[in-house]
Length: 130
Image (cartoon, rainbow, N blue to C red; front, top):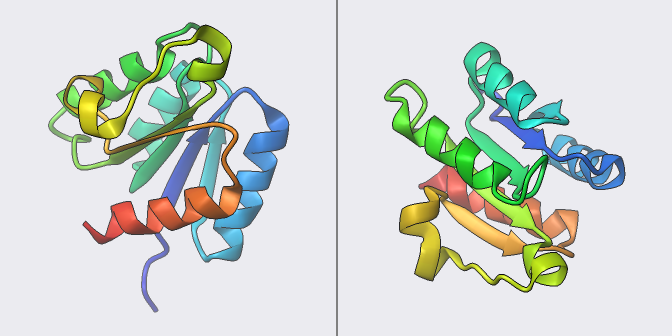
C-alpha cells in the first residue's frame, strides 16, 4: 500500500481549516493542522509533511513568508512544498503572485482567498507531482 502524502494546514480561520482538511482527507491525504506559525514549525519537525498550505497573515501580515523562508532555509525541510493562500489583497491592497514574487517569497504556489477547497486540493496534487 502506498504511503499517504502528509499535508500540514496552518490557518487561524477554523471554518477554512475544517473545510480544507475534509476536502484533503476525502482525496486520501493525511492532514495535520496548526493555528499558529510556531505550531506549524513544530509540526514540520515532528510530522515532516510533504506539503504545507498556510495563510499568509496568521499572526502578522508576513507570517507565512517568514514561515516559508525558515522552512526553505533548512536543508532537512527545503523539499517540502509550500502553498500560501491569503486574503492579503482584499485586506491590505497588496498583491502577490507566484510568477512575480515566488523567488523571494520562497513559496511553491500562491493563491488569493476566497478559494474553494477543491481548487486547493487540485493545486496540492500538482505540487506533489513535481
